[in-house]
Length: 423
Image (tube, rainbow, N blue to C red; front, side, top):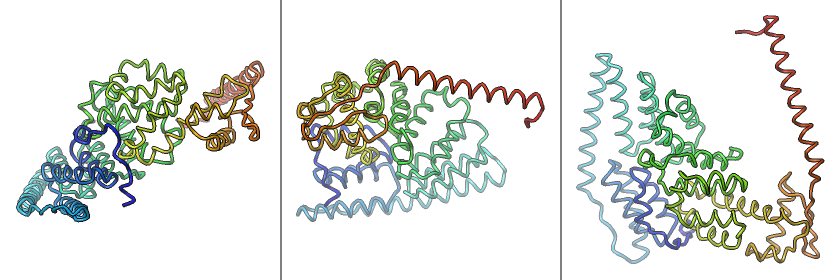
């Protein structure tokens, strides 16, 4: 029952939310919500079962989902769902016939050494196995097309289909990085708005799933704020437009400074189209920018429950909110040399003990906040750095960097002159 501890978020319409997705993304998100939110468990399982029967050949996924649903219904004392044996029998017969047909088609293509037909057969086999719920077999067949790709479009298709299987299964292993890197280096990828936008969505989900990437939220924000709104149809099997707004907006809030927040988010005509789909998020960012922290964190608290029902965002929620809190507190202290912690705690709707812990942590982080805490009198004294000294320090750093780069350039020129560099 611990897995179903998340309360139903206020104003979350499950039908509207889940219908933003299609394919396996829709199924996996439904199953995730079913296991996380007890108030939506039955509805989410039934939605997943409906989509499994309509869009896949995955008998095992269907049977396991029915079993999980019936376990819940039994605990509630409600009638259970019967297995649709006719659907199972039909799928098994159809799957066997389809597999035989595809394998024969591949044999013919191999016998005639037709590279394009062989590539197309492996793609069809990969898609077939994925519809059957066999991820490893799907990936194997998609990867086999690598030797038969004759155009950049073929290579992009191979990379995207492989990446999609990994992400649908929430597998963020190093292998996915190989295909992302390869897709990024394919010529003309950036010129296709749809392809480039879908690649950015793949990059975002991969970053959300990884814990070893420094400044990943800044990378996510920079990736998503430039996705053209008109390209939404190109990636609706990966992310919804609402996801772009939420992932991009919250990541920007946690990582951008005030000037960047204004210029790249609030004044970004393209990204405002995404934010319009999430009015509460737009209100949240504007409140933060206007230093209305009490209201900002009230809205953020409401969003927290919805974010916990997102299979990719759930593991990032606490860290994101912590970063936003820390940034807001540091920003609050900037204009003052002496701050009353009691008033500050009221402004952030938290108790003084929690505030003191956050401040202590911020002061302990290098360059995050320069201040001292008077715990007895509940006062924070900030240290203002001498602007003139700071300017001199920056000038010396710039001068040293210039000297190093000049020396390196001269060394390279001398090596070239002496013919000591391999070409």
